[in-house]
Image (tube, rainbow, N blue to C red; front, side):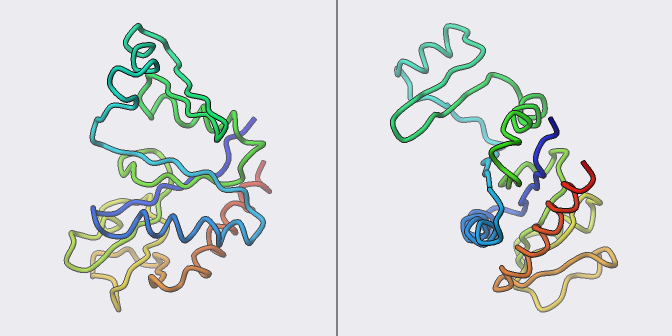
Length: 174
């Protein structure tokens, strides 16, 4: 089974990635899409509370650790995202139409950049895998590639239409 369409939402710290994803999920759902979200962090941090049962299972060498509650299941695999994430998403292709990955600048997914003037260089200026930029700037800097899609921070519906089109385009290719 083919993995659902996945897009990384990238940008410098404080650019508004989390807020964008949080606001984009209901917009995409309103268009009939089932949305999954993955938070990617380049900073290592424990996935399980120190001393917890699941941390003990992980330390014992379990290849997969899950924490199940009435509210849901959290699954941890001891592989780098490059090896684990895309195959894992394939397993959920029947449950979601699109996955938004917050972060993962260096990952293999196509990207939407959140960019604010003064917070760092436009990543789309040096990355060919950025499909669109969401920004509060009146215009993009000179290093922006020609034809790069631009959405204002308040143009959430336009961005949702753009992403919906990408999802449906991929579905027709399958």
